[in-house]
Image (tube, rainbow over all chains, first blue to last red; front, side, top):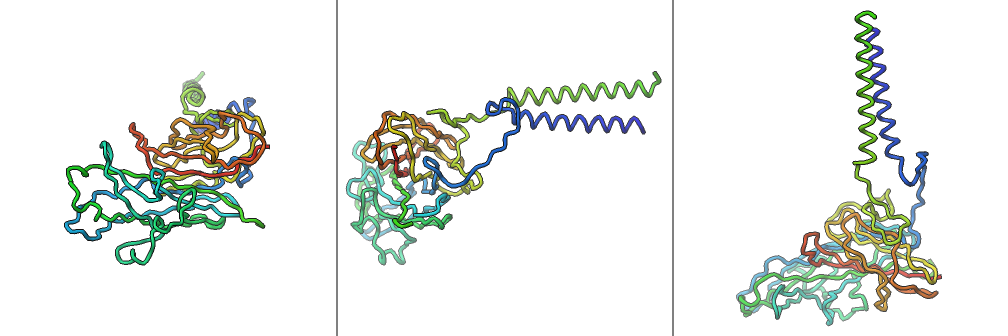
Length: 206
Length: 165
């Protein structure tokens, strides 16, 4: 019985020693070479040069497989996504988000045929809301509003209290552009990219 | 020494040997084999593999899409050759970033190598010094796929005010 108690005490000591060594090995770094315990605190809120906010944008523009219509009629294909105010680390002001197609000089949005000498381009519209065949004609796409600025079309603004807010966006491509085209020439992969511009503005008086 | 005492002594020795091996193993592993994230704080131009958006209590939730950091201001002194600004690729992203720090007149102050998710830097070396004043600047995040093709994805510009004192 006495033997068992001694062995149990020894085992407890061994386990305790291992834990202590493990913890001390983890905290012994170049930042505190003397091995002393370092207690740190962080004051939240973004200072100059720190990240003040994080927004989430869509990865890419991908309309999938397009279909050539048999008649010259509207035939829209839609893709939807959201822009999210993922993290807002400021107390006043708002983050404004703009969008444009950096490769287009005319303020429109395009996808372009890849890996060919004279690529075929297809335009699409961008709406700052959810749009489908049932309501598309009720709204003017951003790229037809004429209201483009240096950084593109104003998509939305996220106020300081709007963390987690989402902005719906719909892209609409009219496959009528493919009507009567030579499929041998226009078949293939298409790609296009959007550029999202953001800035944090504080209104005067805030 | 009777038989039971001898047995106890052997057990104690075995336990001590095991303890020594465990302790030694832990120390060797921690110091030589455990993966240590590189830290760039205070080192100009050094890219850290443990970069984050700077608010560890509010880690951005995982969501579809690409997370883009944004800024309000950054400050430096006239003639400085580096700028404190936290440029990086949030851990939850599934794409790479090429980050370019530039002024709105097109002057490029810094362009990064490919930043994989979780990589970034906080002290950015500048290609040229600036005179006292306020500048409109931005970090252009060019997003690409992580495969060998590095196919361009949607990109983003985060505008901020650069104050040179």
